[in-house]
Length: 235
Ligand SMILES: NC(=O)c1ccc[n+]([C@@H]2O[C@H](COP(=O)([O-])OP(=O)(O)OC[C@H]3O[C@@H](n4cnc5c(N)ncnc54)[C@H](OP(=O)(O)O)[C@@H]3O)[C@@H](O)[C@H]2O)c1
Image (cartoon, rainbow, N blue to C red; front, side, top):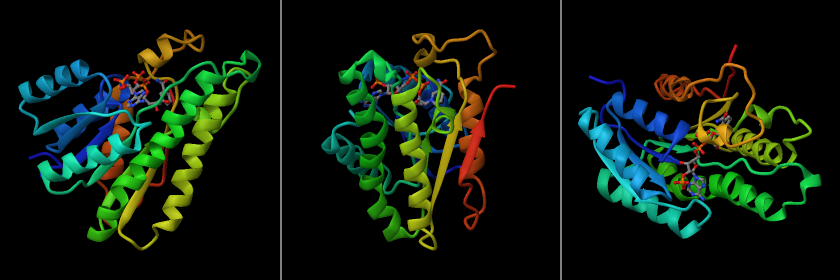
């Protein structure tokens, strides 16, 4: 029997990369998984893959995390299907043109909407029911770019510093409520986010399952243990 049998997890940005890896790993531990992103064909492919492995129940909900209504509907559908949600992984994110000198204001707005507002919408939608049950776990996928800034990462880093600030403040707000918060800061992971960017260097990259394992570690600790921060970098 898996470590998460009977638990339910929502994963945003589950249509590719790290989110798909996290969904797969949670399902292989027996969790019901709710897959959220905009590209439904990709979500359906993952749903079939998980079902073929016989890993668990899957629900797919097309979601744009920049839409508050979409995120509220996502939680509603998950709760209707699986009764309640134990784990909410705020993973959806974008890394676009980040130098202030580039002047690409539309891309900055997009990153702010997805990476910051999307995370806040997710938290706001799931928190009331977690507080009511005095139980739940929110995982925010930040980045090592939320720990350090380079000359090409200014705006992306700003959004990921914000994710860490949200995780840190929320953990303090939620002390003694039974709801846990974990902030995960990955280094470079082999996904389309990196392969499509100029940040793609020749160093060995992490695999998506390396981040998924960090999620499993955090959510399988005893109830009284809150793993606040995990940073995972390639050697
Ligand atoms: N790869 C790395 O090296 C790395 C390092 C540190 C942190 N991260 C973080 O890890 C997370 C996942 O990134 P990844 O590397 O796996 O990249 P990815 O393969 O490009 O995946 C990004 C995911 O976010 C979803 N997404 C984007 N905009 C969305 C929106 N408006 N609404 C809903 N979903 C949206 C995408 O789905 P749709 O397009 O289908 O909506 C996709 O599933 C991001 O937060 C990223 O910042 C990545």
